[in-house]
Length: 136
Image (cartoon, rainbow, N blue to C red; front, side, top):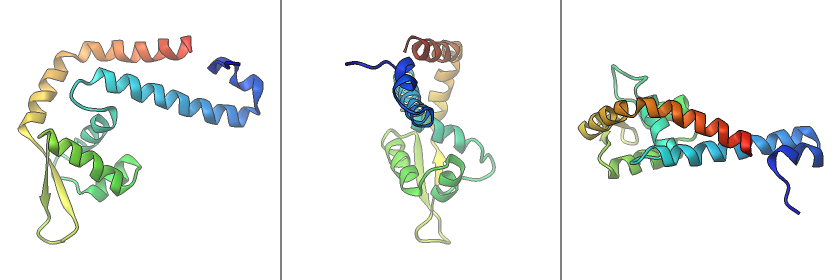
């Protein structure tokens, strides 16, 4: 027997069904976002967007974790993958051994310019997500 998303609430208590549907939505959102961005994942995009909240200083991994609402280890993993793509550089803080700052690289600025060209596609991206969720 196959149960579709719109039928979940018929088979279980609403609080459990809504909880599960939230995860289903997040999985679809991330999968669709990962397909939209060619060089980076949705999580990497979110980290880069959050880095832009720190225009006057390079944020540490701890600051990014607090901003993103996730663990420092998760941020470090995302930063390391962005470093491999030459989009971010990690610089050791001379005052603290364990802390490092993340700095946006020139390649990221070029990538950002290319993304600006796709800005109209972003609306299509959101529309696609909602249509996908509706079809279910």
